[in-house]
Image (cartoon, rainbow, N blue to C red; front, side, top):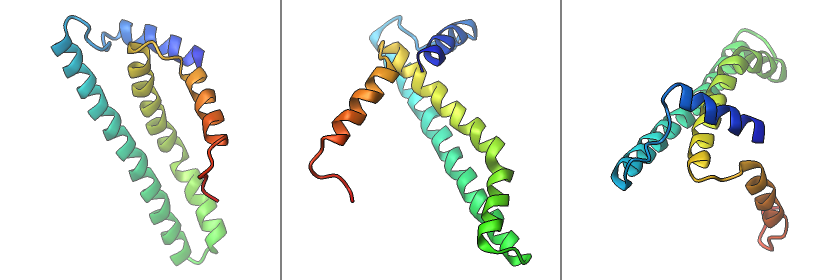
Length: 122
């Protein structure tokens, strides 16, 4: 993840897509805009999942069993779903980079915290 964060930091600078740091108001506006863009990309992930289920149902109507239909549908949405997930990662990294958060470190710390929870889902 460190490599992805470093790549995106340079990439966003090159593309002039960095979060504005000129003032509090500009940073606030830029962060909110990027958050909205992130939520839009998350919605696009949901759209690809919905498309996966719709394709599965169509394959079932065409006579495939459920398992095979779902497997074929997964292959059909895989590339587009990957692109939408990549967009989400880019926005998450942009926000993390702005706050100088090491996502990899935060991830493992959080997973350890979750492991130690008493009220875990079964």
